[in-house]
Length: 167
Image (cartoon, rainbow, N blue to C red; front, side, top):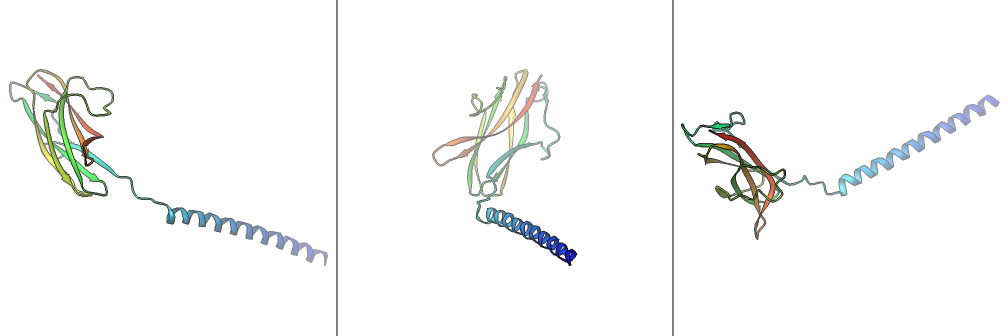
């Protein structure tokens, strides 16, 4: 009889552990479900800019320009709108001899080319930009992406740099 009571006590203790673990799992599941149901988990909005060569690939960028042959070259500037609304953009192309370590508000050089365009959410824009440089030296060609806020264009902190040597 005593063995019967011992077995019953062991079963009661195991049932208590099972109930405690079950309640803990229910609470964790409710918290996780509430987080995903009530939280605002919209994807972060962003813009991208990239460069493509004449064949619209990221392979054969110009590196050396010979002024005896031609002092100009072209690249495609590719911009993607990953914002949730239509956006007005501006691309400024600048040529710099010395590139600063950081570009918080764009580089302080007058642009050699500027163009504007609009993109709907999820759209991509490509534009062929031709640059002419006939003075020998090493240069950084900077393509800066600016976005219209309604009152002014602001630098998006997105840019591409193409390093070239003119001989």
